[in-house]
Length: 268
Ligand code: ATP
Ligand code: TZP
Ligand code: MG
Ligand code: MG
Image 1 (cartoon, helix red, strand yellow):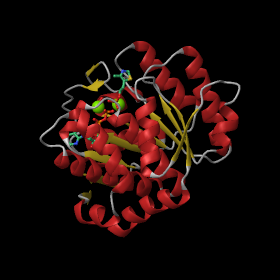
Image 2: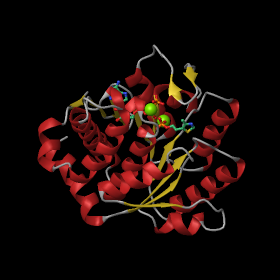
Image 3: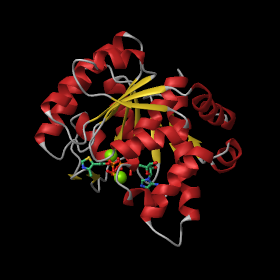
Image 4: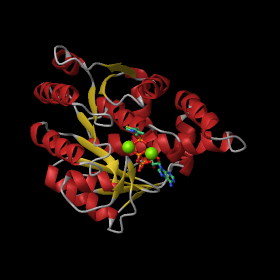
């Protein structure tokens, strides 16, 4: 992928200011909204089953996140997802904690069955559990899986007929045929709750302005990873609190040149 494409997608997010409809968890709601605003997108959180179909159809992307799931919320996610599908709105699914409890796992299965997902984004354990593969998981954090993450992502992409993004130290992005690795990012991201959830919503913002979902996903991963590296460097003497704020600051100010220079994207 040309680095020019990575940069163009971010510029289009800032130009178009896409509406991103999030049905997400209570832990990360404010951080997600602020991260999307900083990036140049327009966040909305809407959960009532009476309105989600109408909101999803006018959005540029719909992000479903089961981090603090409840029966009402799941019902709303399925209504919103079906509306997004009918209206050609891309749906990003973050199956937070799939595998941690039977309810989460079963819900993730129900969502991928009833809604056509455009991009699935999770850690390796979550993605494995969404497609019914064995993988260890502790709470909402990834376990120490030993399998091949590239292979897992490709199997999941083919099985669900969707783009799959598995994040961790290295990120894998695949549609089952073409696969990219993004080597950007910083370990301090794991010390800020919602760093993954925000990323899923940012992928939504990129998918809202770029029809090629592989390009959208790789661009989002590279932009987010480079932004995090810069923010981590600037707050190296401090800690996760300062990093979290600086991540928001840098999402607003990261330049195309910084991304072009620092993006570390590999095509397999
Ligand atoms: P988990 O629940 O396993 O923490 P998550 O949903 O929070 O998962 P992550 O896999 O932590 O999501 O990914 C969020 C962001 O953090 C991604 O951009 C990813 O590249 C980055 N990241 C995670 N771990 C590392 C690491 N060790 N080094 C560099 N970047 C990382
Ligand atoms: N508990 C339920 S959802 C959630 C926690 C801590 C946030 C998870 O965020 P992320 O982005 O997956 O680290
Ligand atoms: Mg995390
Ligand atoms: Mg997560």
